[in-house]
Picture (cartoon, rainbow, N blue to C red):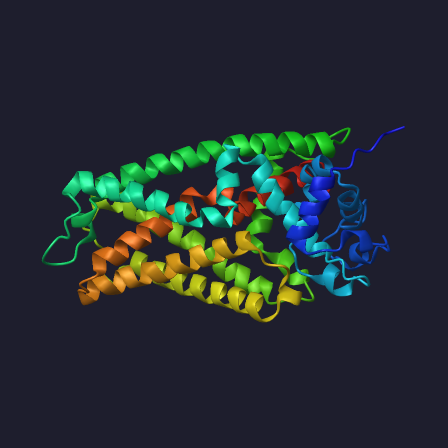
Amino acid sequence: MRILEPDIDFIEKLSKDSGAPLKQCMQCGTCSVICKLSPEDNPFPRKEMIWAGWGLKEKLLGDPDIWLCHQCGDCTTYCPRGVKPGDVLSSLRFMSYLHYSKPKFIASFLSKIQNLPFIILIPAIIILIIIYLINGLNIPSGEIIYSKFFPHKQLNISFSILVLLTVVGIIFSMKSFWKDLKKHMHPKETKNKIFKSFINAFKEILSHLKFNKCQSNNYKFSTHLMVFYGFITLLFVTFFAIISVLFFEYPLSFFNPVKIAGNIAALSLFTGLSIMIFKRLTDEELSGNSNYFDWIFLISLYLLVISGVLVEIARFDSWKIAYHIYFVHLVLVWMVIVYLPYTKFGHIIYRITALTYCKFIGRI
């Protein structure tokens, strides 16, 4: 006989974060039946809903099925009691960031809205200190060349160090997450090779085809594609810029293929984010419950794109505030990239890890 030990605080927090009346779930199974992403064997989210009502925190956080959900809203739309299973799974994913992130105190710090001023000030102060040590915070005169304000060498070195520290944190976080996945869903034998499972999971992420199965929120397929590939393209453009200063004349001309790719990616990202934000503002019931964690991710990325475009225009049009805009852009780059594993952006990392594990054990 197994004795259950409900975590009452967990139940209350999950109910508050998700806005879902967990006690109203009558276990009818409609959510699992309507979900086209749920495996036939031991489907979700019915079992997750009863675990949530019982307060089984550890079992839920180590459950890979919460990452198979794409929050399309079908289960919430058809739930006869309005319990919002999709929002419950979304809140569980948010809790996973806090639970598995290393070091954990960073995720906890970033998750609190009252810390937002410090979240912005920390990168701003660090960047100001570096610039002060380089040029005394003097605004360069003459032609606008951003490397005169923050030399590329120092910029690339400082940013690379921060990214390296972030990657180390990601590795330790994934190690802890994988350990719990094995603990809570451990098969007698694995079905596939782990590397092959990772490749298949990566292909699934790249295709975004699972979003096409959504009925209630069918717009998510196109918007997520625009955001995902827009951001990935901008990452490649950024890495090219870091390398190009060693071999090519910089800054690049407006008609350089890399610059054109970056501008197209920015437009794609801006369009996708605009639709996402509009849908969340105008149709919360269908888009799902939005909390601070959702908004800080969307707004940071949105402002990053806008500031990047303004930085480019300011240079070509010789704006007097060009260097000020560039500084704001650098702060936003920090907030999006360096804070990545500790914010909702980290769902990319956790989802691909969970998908890899599910394919590894033959779950999907």
